[in-house]
Amino acid sequence: MIINKLSLINFKSHSEVSFDFSPQINCFVGNNGVGKTNILDALHYLSVGKSFLGNSDLNNILSHKLEDGSQMTMDFFVIDSEIQNEEKEDLIKILMPREAKKVIKKNDKTYDRLADHIGYLPSVMISPYDSNLISDSGESRRKFLDAMISQTDSVYLFDLIQYQKTIQQRNALLKNFAKNRYFDKDSLEIYDDPISNFGTRIFEKRKEFVENLNPIVQHYYDIISGGKEKVSVVYESHLSDNTFQELLTSSIDKDRVLTYTSKGIHKDDLVFEMNGSSIKKIGSQGQQKSFLVSLKLAQINRIKELTGKSPILLLDDIFDKLDDTRVSQLIELVNKENFGQIFITDTHKERTENVVKRIHEESKIFEIS
Ligand SMILES: Nc1ncnc2c1ncn2[C@@H]1O[C@H](COP(=O)(O)OP(=O)(O)OP(=O)(O)O)[C@@H](O)[C@H]1O
Image (cartoon, rainbow, N blue to C red; front, side, top):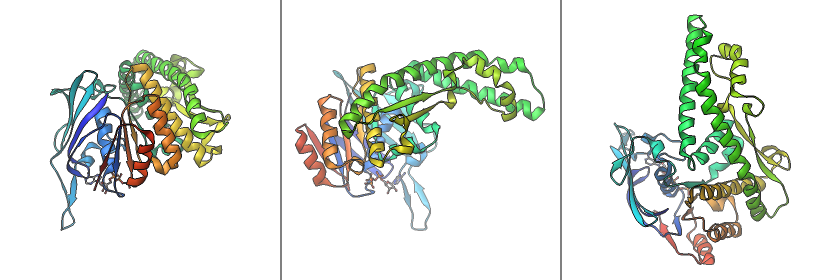
């Protein structure tokens, strides 16, 4: 999948801008705050229909500060694109009106559900925010894992949506019981089967995905760090030692007190390890950065293997993470393995030009001001 063209109207800091991209390397250069990352975010929208920063869609509509200090927000944003999909070109358009629902269209046909678009244009982002994956709570690692698998498996995404809905319904019932000082075991158990079925399938897929990811993470870590450490991703789940039915039955009393479902795959976590210990505790800054880049490269590799599509690679402020030589190595590696189209942001035009020159691939540099 190659993005041939992109145009933005009222998206974040960009009132109107268009690009004709190179099928290989595209660089956005310019000073801090000129809107380079915002362009990567627009590309992320094209991939998964939302911002990678987790901002609400409304916050991404261009807004200006007026002289009286008040804020004026435009009526909509549009992200328009032409995507090379093997022999044909598709038009993907995202329209976000200020006072209506977001619309995603492929060749003028509106998707009924955002989930139907996921996986069409897979992407992987490497950004300074990746370190949050190590420092944040389990929720951000679960989201990362879910986003990664969803790009390769639409049934997984469907199961996940159904699982989350059913957990919400069970939690609502638990709250209702507590509020009315009443309990009916039979009506709570109505949710056991759907939760077990969806949850167990999700567990099996997460387990298999992580198992297959590990040797590839190690492969890239060896190349990037040149180090001898053994790195791995450990998948932790309540389901590792119990069936879902056992978990639900044994935690019923606790769930009544807490008024939510305390056990299940919505509590899963990933532990990033180096030589058998948590990388958060023992990894140096450099080792953590190398691990995160390796994890993302492994993600590209898995997506490509499972879907046959090369994900677009979004490299935000990559020079802040790695030195120039490492960046060249990384881009060469990505190119050698024929990973797909790359988008890079950098504050230094010359540095980017030098790196790109060394690689001898077709590239374009866009100056953003
Ligand atoms: N909805 C919006 N309306 C107007 N401006 C916005 C909106 N959302 C974000 N911005 C502006 O976009 C700018 C940040 O852009 P971005 O992060 O893309 O910069 P950058 O060029 O990547 O900078 P750096 O080199 O520091 O990473 C900020 O000035 C911010 O105020």
